Image (cartoon, rainbow, N blue to C red; front, side):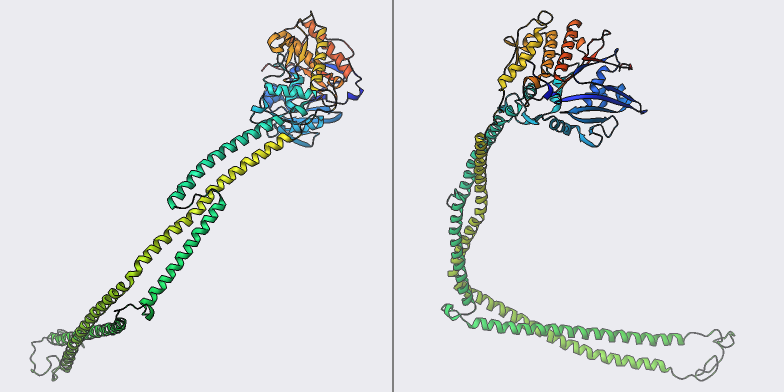
Length: 639
């Protein structure tokens, strides 16, 4: 069954070495070889499992260093790197254990990728399909697509302590099927996702149709309500709305023209046009009103002027009265100071007695003759002059007040006359305008209704536009569904069919398990359903018939078969080229069986040019030219 392997030696993944750099700069390095079984040996807590985890961490593990590598390793080392080949091309993958660089994978010392982007990079390097798969077992009922990452497939070839009784630890069934189809080489066809896209297109079409039905009903109700309220035809399309708008616009233009003509007739009549002057209308009323208004304006100007003049005369009288009072105070002050006795000589400052004998007409101080006071007489003359001026002002004020009263009376008379003329004119015009008022009111009401109708058309158009958009959405969804349905489904590449691939893989597992019938394996042969990729043991699914120990042997056979994928199948298969098996001795199977299994895996690695890395705590090493032991030099404290 085995084919020549020379053409397959470079395919897949080969781990050359793993290197751990301490804080001190010291380096712990372990190397591995292809075409053989690499056994990492050592006592408990000597970092055998951690070495596998270090390789896994360099291959894009998203966990923190403490979760992925244990706290002791995370605190001791600052960097981990792995030298490997991908489809024969050498690369160095480096992960830093220091904060700020934890989520990066450094490729060949230069390029750094986020751990989320690393999957796409390594899938390209391995020529494995980078697929989006439905997130659910049934593609038609899945709601979204999710990536089939490199990490999903790695869990099938790196069997850690928690995945000896299942394909991968905590793996969803839809991911398991995708990984198996990828390994067997028909994932590209299986996950063209036409069924998923058709189901999604049908969902979108159903949603669009539901929205369209709701919109059709609600818009018809809204348009009908608006049309009934405004008494316009119920429009079911934008064309009908445009026609109804044109009709209303024509009616509105006609109403505007009628109102303009009627307004022109009224203006001609109001301004005395002969062609519209009604019988019995006195055209002199307007002239009399204008003349009266001019006379009233002159009366108002006259009243204003007289009021100002009267105010000025009163101010002048007040000024003269104040001057008279001032002069009178001056005379009084002269008499007052004249009676004051002199007690001190202003020249020699000697005391003077006013009772000193002196002539009546002489000064008692200097005995000089004293004449009448000229200042008093002058002040009295001024007083008399001012009193005469005040009397004249009083006469003028009296006459001005009379003229002002006459002007007030004339203004009042003219105002009354103007009001009477205005009333007569209004009555005359009201009598003439009465026939027009009814027509104007009817026109105003009609125009208001037509304008309200015009404002409703944009709202109706917007409502109908929703219907058009909903219909267009349905048409677009239907076209998308038709396009997806009519699109060509990718055909299986020339070569093996999915059923043949499943049969060959199952045959390889059965050839492995045949050796252990009666030595651990007592069940029937394995078959694989190509429709749902269920593994049957006999007539029942593997997980319903196999116990814990048999499951371990089942997955060792599964791992064994992956080493022969490139030999048994073709270029379409995702050929891993290596296995990592952690603690196969600690799963409840007899140690002699595990030794035999590991011997078979070593021979398979030699025959296929692949690589197997496993851990072993037993003191008795396996022997063989295709088996290499790597002893762990250190022991760590248990966390």
